[in-house]
Image (cartoon, rainbow, N blue to C red; front, side):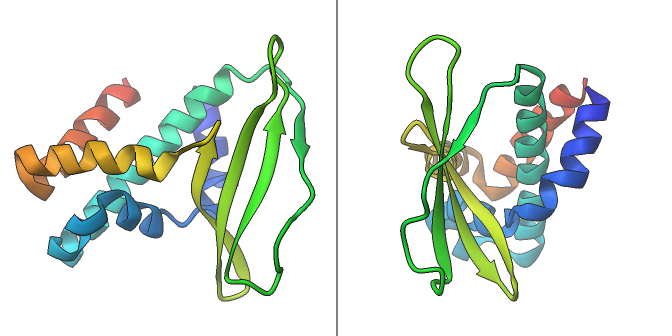
Length: 151
């Protein structure tokens, strides 16, 4: 699994905007966070997402990905790329990527799997954790989860 993690770090991470993802996932609490907390949260959230993604790649068994026609204005600063992953048994699973343009590059800032936004999903759990333990508590919880995922 360390080879897959290294592959994801090299090939996937450069295409994601983890700072924007972290800001969106923390929601209204972002304004209360210090810059140091924002950076620590982004680092821990990035590691969690990368490790989770790497683990899901271990279960990948060659399912075909269909890229649907682009609908929208390529001149926009934010776009959505729609795909469907053909399941072995059952209907295809829609996986859509929200991208934002940073300078001259497109970066992913959210992934919607079967209608569920990754960022929105984390926003509710982050808000609950901040309510219980504060922003530093959330960062510690993410760090603990990452430590367990590292083995």
